[in-house]
Image 1: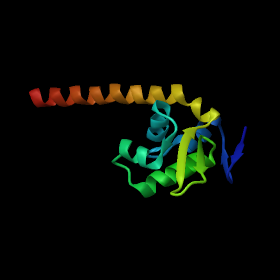
Image 2: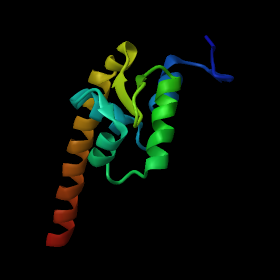
Image 3: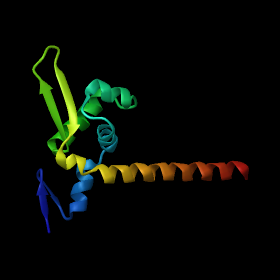
Image 4: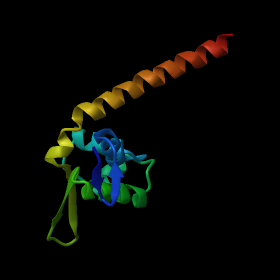
Length: 120
């Protein structure tokens, strides 16, 4: 079964899913929006100080293009823009939570391995 999406062909839903949520900061952005929503760009930058603004905006735009997040622009001066997960984006909660939990387990495993090497 072929899936055509954004001028690309995917052979399984798994390929498509990894394409949509893959990227250095997308899982972290989704995690932030699962913890607190909606968020403004400046609030996200405070939660993610390691990512520069240009990259954050790029990843947000890609997530918006894929309907994972909703960008709301308020007609005020100065401009106010908020981001929140869409309905389909909220369905990523168990996936993102599992990935983050696995990351914690893996990190602990690496620490234990490093401690063993130091002892030897």
